[in-house]
Image (tube, rainbow over the protein chains, first blue to last red):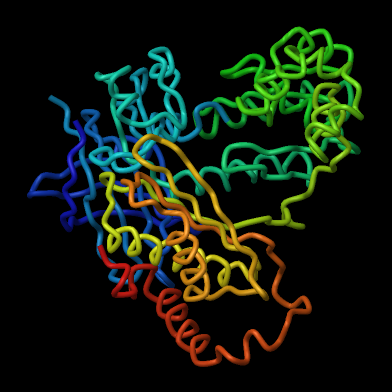
Length: 83
Length: 378
């Protein structure tokens, strides 16, 4: 079941062709490798943009993360953990 | 697009795949179903249905809050695909578009192959399915697109249209609701074929200007062009409505919501550069009886205060003190800014306009919730 988290996290990402690709995230000391980005979208907060990513971890855990271009902070919004 | 919002959610979160998924407002609140996945539809859940009814029909369904930004983002990406096939693309809604293939390599006989390529790209790039209708005009194409949902592809001409649709009930026509169907039955029209053959002058006498339109719809006639996205489709009205968390007869609560809705409508008018001259109030009570009342203004406006004043006046005139479930405010009679308008209307409200400019600039910079009218706070 999906759970709302809204906690700051660390994310390793690469930027290519004007697009950001999250590769790895660390939440509560645990590192999760991104298996697949299943979707992305942008939310405008006034002049700032918040970039959202839906991602699957290696063991099919689902994470929804976002990057706020105003604060430069990554946030884990929601998760659905396997098992 | 097929069950667009629900399908996007299923693609973004694969845990939802194959499940009865219902996209709605906040699931812990009341409201209506925005979109139901095909799995949920098997249980009778459909768009527009109150959530309470949906939960009764599909208690095991997964209810998720819709995310407009997500769907708009995907919709704009889909538009990019369509533009690779023709520049004449008319986005009809967030999940529907008309494409004019005239003059492209996919014209005529090649249209079906073009449609297959579009469907393939949508599937490959977004894992989504679309149902496509190909026809000589927009109305027939729209009707054809609904024939083999989901993932359909149907090409028809006028003769096919008659063969396929004339035997069907009038309510299967796109744009004919239950009320119109009942009115048509009253004059002996049951099927689309009956309507197609019915004398237009009688339809006109019965339904006014819509009488002719109804006849055209039944005959698959439509000469409206595909309006390309870059020209923009003229907007007729702008409005917002809100289902309250619980039915209420509290004047304070109802006026608070009217103020918030008026504020949102005014903001949209200014953002998109429109003035309007008619304010409409919509009220739905606990018994699901809905009324809409409107008032034409002496001039044009895009100001929250003016919209709220008229909406509140209409509310006071028409509310009988019963519990209300839904309130809505809209403004119509829109004209684009820059066209000739009565100057006096704006001169006398100079102070209010300056306040609005400040509010709008704060919202543009920091987001919609950066500043909220005290009277509209929940």
